[in-house]
Amino acid sequence: MSLRFRLIGMVCVALVVSLALGAATAWINASRSVRTEMRSALLVGRQTIENAIERLQNSGDPLHDLEDLVASFDGNRHLRVRLIGEGEAITAPIVERPPFGPLPGWFIRLIGVGSTADRVPIVVRGRDDATIVLETDPHNEILEVWNEFTGSLVTPAVFSSLTILLIYVFIGRALRPLAALAVALEQVGDGRYRTRIAGRLGPELARLRDSFNRMAARLADADAENRRLNEQLLTLQEQERSELARDLHDEVSPFLFAINIDATAASRLLNDGRADEARDRVQSIADAVRPMQRQVRSMLGRLRPIGLDEFGLREAIENMIAFWRQRRPEIRYQLAISTECEGLGELVGLTICRIVQECLSNAVRHAGPTLITVSVDREDADVRVEVADDGNGMPEPRRPGYGLVGIGERVKAIGGSLSFSNKPAQGFAVAAVLPCASEQQPACVSVREEL
Image 1 (cartoon, rainbow, N blue to C red):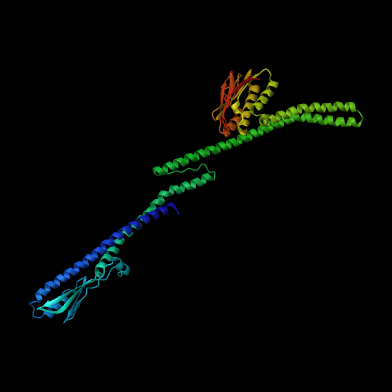
Image 2 (cartoon, rainbow, N blue to C red; image 1 turned 90 degrees about the vertical axis):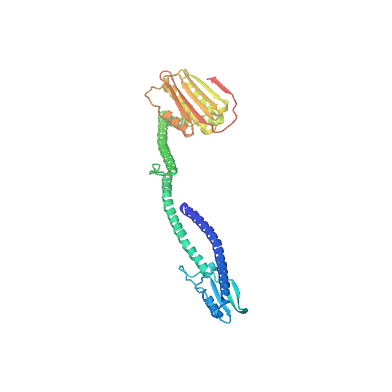
């Protein structure tokens, strides 16, 4: 059931309860009023007859006067008078016709006032020859109450109908913004984040409208950011694939070509019975396989840090530093990893390795440093990673390359933050704060060493 009809139902229940209470009060008052009226009519009638009896004592024709006495009650609304004795006479109240239809039997039973009778003996000059019977008839009085009751129902009925109609109209107008909000929420659920709610509303609905518009705006920004991240991810993937393809083409492919030539030559020499010369070709194949293995190992290290799964975070970072130390031995490398940073989880550990890998590569290739420091430390529920060098730094106008942008997006994707500290000709530093994947008791030990 809709909210509108629920509210209307509640109002109807309140009106019905009010009418029921009013009807109960009216019933009690009406029953008391009819009973009082009947009692009064009976007392007045008896008093009238007793006064007339005193006058009959000097009457020349008492019977005729008695009949006139009974006839004097003609037109009385509540009494039926009957003379019993030597003469017979009777008068009955006129039954009034109701303007709103016949008097219902259930209403008469509800009032619960019946007829009562009183007998007045007539003693004239010592003779007790007649009796006047007074009998109340509450029909006209109950009819009067019924007319008042039905007449009084018109106003509440009209009032209740108008009230329900106004409630229906005004609640419909008040709930119209909620219907618009429901439509807007469906549109947002379908991905249309540019949906907005406009128009003048009451204070309560205005706050709801403003909250919805802010939510939709944030969802639109988040959707735009996701699209940008997806495009950036695709760009980085294509760049990484291009680098792998170039390495395969420039580094691995020549060795494979040489191996193919040597294998063909060795096979021909063996067929010719020239085993010594074939042995040289086989050795050439072995010599070509070794650099190719190193190159493939290097490529695999770029795809996933070597040692992370097998030995942990420290071993993986030490392998990266060892890789560059072999190629640039003139650079000093300092590594500081807190022992409480082990067991951070695969995602956090892989992100740390990617940060260190990218920063080491950038520093060695572009900065010309003499010292590179790497530190990984635990700060409450976060892990802080810093990689700094004392090289040339980044020229101010230059924006970060795809590598730094990529690790920035990777850090942001797991709820972390990345910052740069750049001093041209003095050095460059990268700092990342990552949320821990798992909670454990800190070992309170930090190891610092120079490799």
